[in-house]
Length: 223
Image (cartoon, rainbow, N blue to C red; front, side):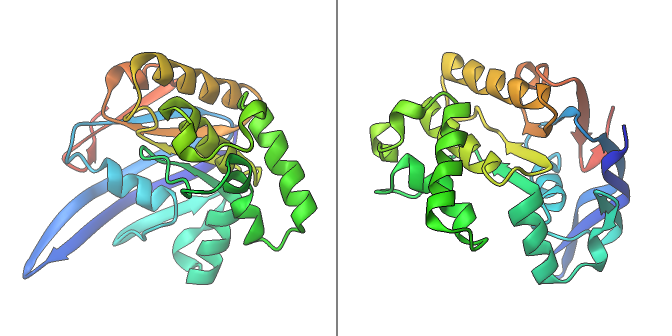
């Protein structure tokens, strides 16, 4: 399969005061379209920086990043925002749902920014919630949902735009083992129908759900 993600000798260095701190060092890797990959490593290994670069939230200090054969470093900020909103679905550890807002409206929110009419937004949000088995929770607010249910709402929001890639950052980090297993099973189901999934985690047991693991240590690919 062609690569949807291709990093070649990517480095990211942050300037803290008068000191340059390397977060990623000469990282090269590829993720095939439709693959399920886990990027795993301990705290401080560079996972968050990797997520930010893969998600077009940050740019490398050096090296090249091709997303779906497009050179990310050549894109303007507006073009990057378009890639994030249409081609990448984000799932975060803390769910990042809007409080006092129904599950349906939380899921529909990304479509609002694409200018999609309200009726179509609600139809697609309903379908996304059905895909994550929450059709009976469309009118519930986050405070009325369990942690596992909130994460499934977040996954529905991530897939409602039909992105090329799901980028999941510690998606089970705030969940008990049962809810975490349900979320991982859902990510496997989404991958099984062709969605590329990149999982960022520090837990080896969670990473085992992926088809392939990439280990980071001290900002470098270790294995």
